[in-house]
Amino acid sequence: MARFVIVNGIGDTVVAFRGALVRDLVARGHEVIVSTPRPVERSAESVEDEVRALGAQCVFSPLDRTG
Image: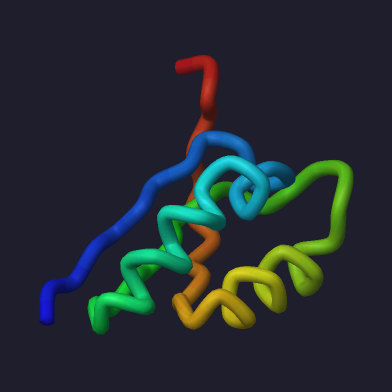
């Protein structure tokens, strides 16, 4: 089993853009941590719930996608 950290620059779209990858890695028995900034247009709880439903851990980290 390997550990993967997936870093996404936009918190609102992490599941839409990386969900299939996360699901596949978890299905193969890997530990997955998704790191993303707090969402702007959605609640952080809803994003965290969706990531957990995929079988991964969600970590909100300060990240400015423009620099």
